Length: 303
Image 1 (cartoon, rainbow, N blue to C red):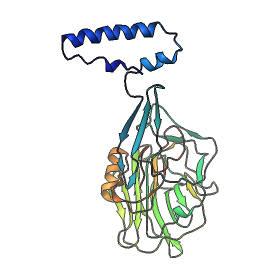
Image 2 (cartoon, rainbow, N blue to C red):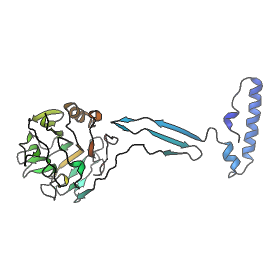
Image 3 (cartoon, rainbow, N blue to C red):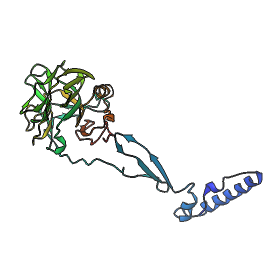
Image 4 (cartoon, rainbow, N blue to C red):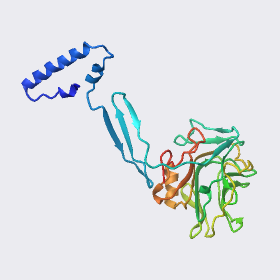
């Protein structure tokens, strides 16, 4: 098989003349063949038929290195599956049809608006049963809170909710009861980020707003484990649904305490800092839909 680049190697005048003659001969051979002739396909191949392109990606603790294979005859990239992926086996369902995804007012492409009728349920799973630590994050706009509503709750384990007085509350369930919550009084209809976290051995409950610590305590105790489902924008079963004009993006649930640095980074960039080495159990970025993005740092993350 003849390759065009075999001929384009002039080293002196004589070689140049010879190369030109050979190229002209090659062109004559090509144009004299029928378009479907196999020889034509071979002769117009100007480089090796297969090329590998390796991309090294270090995210969290996972190996997501990737090798792309380019078959030039087909002009098609074929992607090799990463060697390490996280099996996403959570079962998620949306109740109601009141979730919409605005285009012009998104936060870097992410946002869901709730008309007060819809919520998301994720079936109980062992991955939700934490003992010593938990972290929850999201970006929100919250309406005035008459009647109160829930942002995230796994009944008798942990919850993030709004009470009647435009007050945000985060509390974990230990010792047979929800503990006294850490709180923040918000201004309705304004954008802010929330990072709620707990560590039983030392840090207690913490609530970060826009990257700054708003409230904390020093309680201890193992987080209770229950068989209840995880619910977003309601309590499981459909009570305490988020009020109309509630907006949310970048929801994340983690099996670890989230640090002050993490909260600051999240507020600044809406990105998850994986350097703490914990697992992100669930992410829903709300980029055009309410589908989960398993192990995603706004699209790419595996712990």
